[in-house]
Image (cartoon, rainbow, N blue to C red; front, side, top):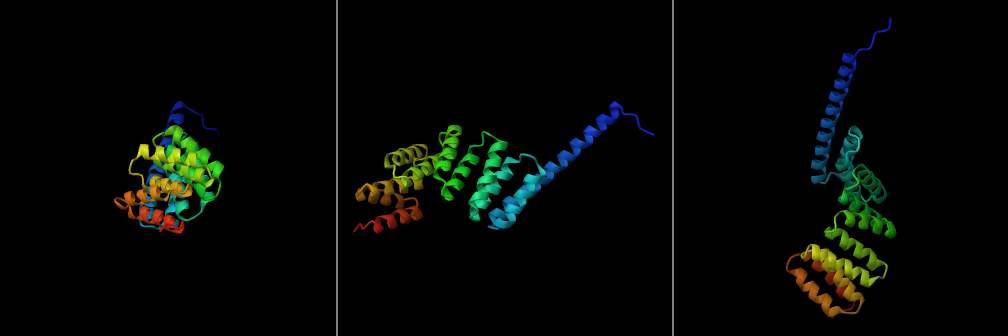
Length: 211
């Protein structure tokens, strides 16, 4: 015999679904936090598995998708990283950092045109994103566009005056233009606050034949 449907039945079903959804969301959050802890310890393969599971349990979990992409970058899996960043951006269209990560993944994969598109999208959402300006400049420099690279590096430094990678990029641009003295000046500046970046620029200066 068929049981008659009532509004109370519908309400009970709705409450049950809401409760199940809340439980799944809490479980996803716990798994996500575990992934963060694993990534902090450098256990990237295990962290990636946790982020994947968290994203599977909660629909459009943009943070889990973003961190899955970042973890893939650490593992050198650039194409997979791009897919996760794309999903994070689709879940949250105003997620500037997801577009930045997508640009980094595309650039690492040698897809300069797609990287530029992603960096530009990031900068439309966050015009003061110094890293995006700097990496955009790196793409331009790779393309032989010194003027474009110089503008982008300048914007990065305007957003963040102590941005070490932007100073390295400026040094490389000046070296490429034959201005080794300016590059050396940037190297000396970097020595004051970022020795690793200073060493990177010094190697380039040395390789250029500076004595």
